[in-house]
Image 1 (cartoon, helix red, strand yellow):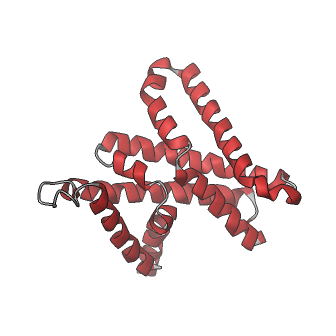
Image 2: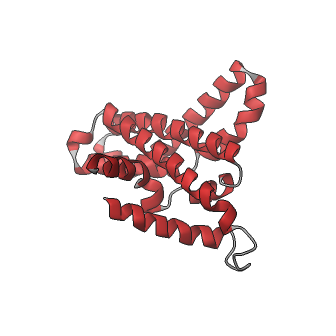
Length: 190
């Protein structure tokens, strides 16, 4: 039983639920399962590769320049953005036309940058976490948590946007309250 509880907490109690990162993208994507899966998958790719670039940045950045960490993380994600778009363009122009919107929405999503900053904070607090494998694992965890959270929001989307919900509360406000309740429930699993 503890293993199941830990696994659920591992997947769901992540940056999205504890810090509400990327919620606006989730709300937009929750209306369509195809866009939800594509957006969540691309965000997972960006959190994973972004975490690797954060590791490299943290290792190479001199201590006197740590105030510029956010700038270098943004630069690294921007470079990844260009690399992924270019690779997709040269691989298949048809797939590029279909997938570029997901890359645009995902690359500079606050979930990606929040993941990098959270990993940096954890590594600063505990130097045993300062290795590439741990950074990338944290990026994958954040991405998987984003996917699980997206699925949870998709399950409730139709009900929270239905005509049974008062008009002033329908949509975004109802989703925020729902997200808050789910966050508390998942936090209780920890």
